[in-house]
Image 1 (cartoon, rainbow, N blue to C red):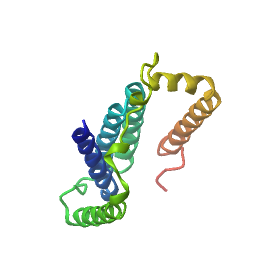
Image 2: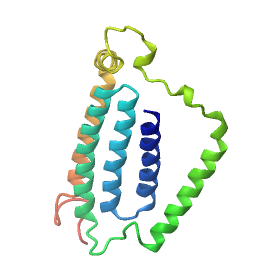
Image 3: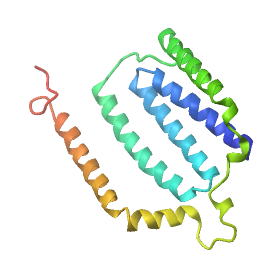
Image 4: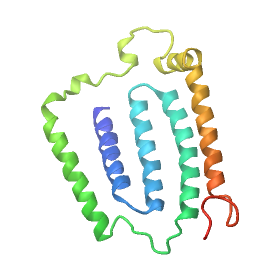
Length: 173
């Protein structure tokens, strides 16, 4: 299980480097979906199966909306891919920075600190991620409603910005 977690975390770092170094929205959106999947795999490895499922579904839906808007607004006939020279320079630079930070913190990291949520409870009646969902809906209900309101407002702002050529903020002048 430890090797799988190492593989997922390594893929997460490489995916984040791929997202940060790519100027094209097509490949960046694909990289974000891959990074979301790897992050949810890490959450599953630590015992948060329900949380990872909800996070992946919400994040995947959001990324599909972002990809549709970015593809509509930035129509490039030949987008830069991960094999282009400028993107490779950015990838190598980001990997150098990640390697330097990992080397700096290498000796403070211990494998024994990787404990799952359910390993610390013994014979618990409720899994940790479902108990967290109950807390989210009970004491975090106000924040949940506020986040839903902000997402709805953001949707209306984006729809208003891209409404059409004659009405809206992004029109051809």
